[in-house]
Length: 109
Image 1 (tube, one colour):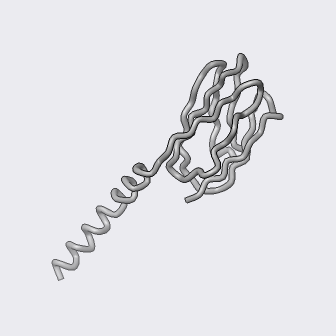
Image 2: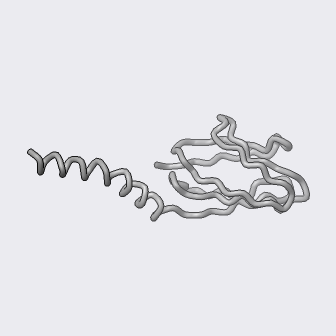
């Protein structure tokens, strides 16, 4: 009985750590450039754990703000910001200062 309990406890204690390591090992970093009041091409095969680097190359301040409030990246002129994709789903976003600037991120598990 003790051996079974020790094995069960070992599995419970190591499983979350193993999952985190696996997610980090497969994470990819993508860059989205904001220029001329437009979001540049968006990555097509995003997964949970991937990183998006937002680069604002405009002379204006921009944001990448999710319509569902799941993220809000504020980017002064010439700034860069990073965001880790924490959840799967389809996320429509826009710039709070320029509402005509829009995009959609599709994130797979």
